[in-house]
Length: 290
Image (cartoon, rainbow, N blue to C red; front, top):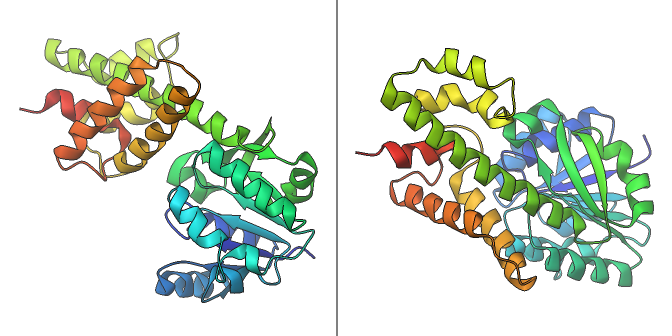
């Protein structure tokens, strides 16, 4: 495989995503702010680690980012130690971070000035999807860059949908998070009533999940929610970050999203309960608190 890759950011998503790249035949060098994690990855996957993002990206034809937020993206893209300092013309930068559409447009312009392709490609599917290599990527940017990067992205993203120009991948991810928020709140209220009136959860879900009420959240989270187990999955802190981005975009567009704003505040209450790292299904815990 002639394409060499760099992967910046080895969190719960990035670590396995980079592993799929390496195992898929793409020679991969990684960078992580905590160097020991990068070294552990290099040992586990027989890859390489670098001391800075710039060093990781130096010889890469494809550079992926998967960090925390807009500021984190800027910190690994710009400056002497950022990836743009060493990326060559003709290479491609792919940002898997869930960030703002404005940032995607900004970096797309900075990359274009250097002859570098750019894709904003936030993913959904969570830690489990990353580990199993079955994520969904919502992709904005240069379609030609996507065609050249697609084989590598397929190592961990089973579904790859091109959404439009730079920023459209992030806009699609905002819609994704808005829809999740509403579904989880509805499921939480339904399960709260079910427990109160004494319905059997397994029988209930078997009855209602096959029709219009069914959802991924219902199928995959009802049993852990019923058991009050939230130490898994996508953290409330990250969901609040994503909803803030969505609400800011809605304000920019002159739109009202009262349900999203309300659920965001419910998640703020979960944080105050000590649930910052709980799974997003912990909205039920807020309803059932004593």
